[in-house]
Image (cartoon, rainbow, N blue to C red; front, side, top):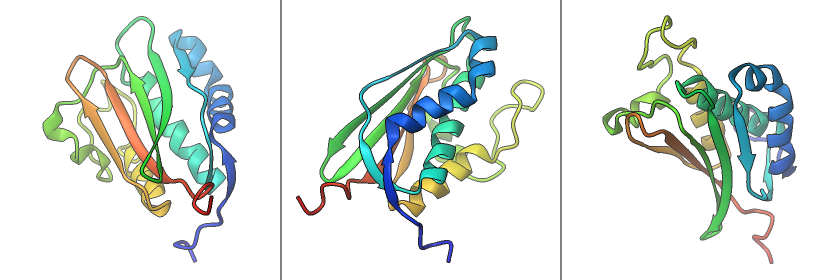
Length: 159
């Protein structure tokens, strides 16, 4: 059943390195800089979490008009969850659209302006919800965005 995810120990830092490798041509073409803190090992579905990081990092590069897109991935532990952040120096989002962007096929820009199908963030939301987490964005137009998501810390739940 789809709701019952196969959870394993996942090294989130390894996933981010894999995404950087997978997006190598985009990163190179856009001259993007991707940095990350030390990232934790979590309980999750590796394939889905890979897709989550891929969508968020790819969007961070895509929705940037700067000469050098900069993306930084962080993680902090709060109250039994890992809170990940994917920060960029992109075009930003008007806070009034902060919820709408996670709805399937909702786009804030024309396909001529930025390629995409309106599925990426809706998929991210579903992946995070399937992991019993939350996803949200903090952003200002023209000032970049930070997409946050939480994953329960099941690694140390019984410690």
